Image 1 (cartoon, helix red, strand yellow):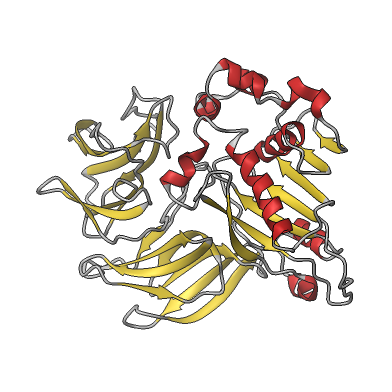
Image 2: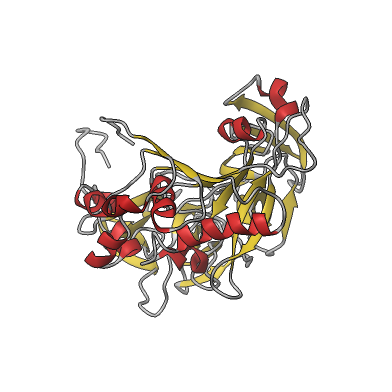
Length: 434
């Protein structure tokens, strides 16, 4: 915070490891914020606070709204004040899914606005994410426009936070990242299997109940339409893991090219994609690096292994202490499932990944015999080296995912190069800021 008189910074809060989402209410008398401390990431455990300003502009009183009860594991995020001065936020305290909540200041009680087994937010890898917005700036407005992710797809909904009524808005996006509101309309950042990442304006009717217009105001690839005849559209799939009764998820892209037809007696080779993070997710949206393969006769599958975002806390926590085990098993299980269901050639299974996905790729090749070849792009081969050079934000992240010193050694592919029995190509920059 800066003084308007001296332009000098004024410290309002200190003492914790991380702070995010400072939000001042319309009266400028209160401020909400998120804070958390090592060894947690913000999506593991965090706290939401409200502070009251003194006449000198200092925070003289503060209340913990969520995350302070040691009997409740939750990770509140995205606090926002309505025009009426009501505090809303997102947390996963009950079902393990990030849902929208409201703080009743008079009774100091947190109330769930709407319950759904879906993710209304995502892990905070970057600041400033906006998963919901208030429609209109008048005190009478009770509508929230929000995005949420359920069963591998994003949806946009209208929520009346007084009545609790909820309705979907049909948009051509299958993945939505950010929402901001305007007068009678809102803007979304989104994409789909055939639309690149774009920003669209959505206009609502007078009652703010349905969309009357959808127009893309910015596109990351404006000339994409000429390539659409080559696009393979993904199939959201569920497959069994090595744990009996447990399932994981993926997006399967069959080979497709409108000018060629594959042989009826030949199954395609498969390339398995392992996303980075690892607390991130594949979203099934247009990716030309995927279409490169599918347009040339390959099948591609993007795996959301256990530990991925988008499926709730329980699914996300499958990777705690198990990085290099659960992700590897799930990627191998996905490939063998596609073989068993007759979709791909068992003798031509390959795997690829970037960064944390590169680690999963290398671990698949070193510790399993499922794949015939692989590629790692700026991947991690030595977990101990990664831990030693980790910056403050992720200082304990790897400890939570790996565990003890023995696990660091046993899961690092660099320590077992003799186990690589198939071709692998490595792309690693000498000076790589990523």
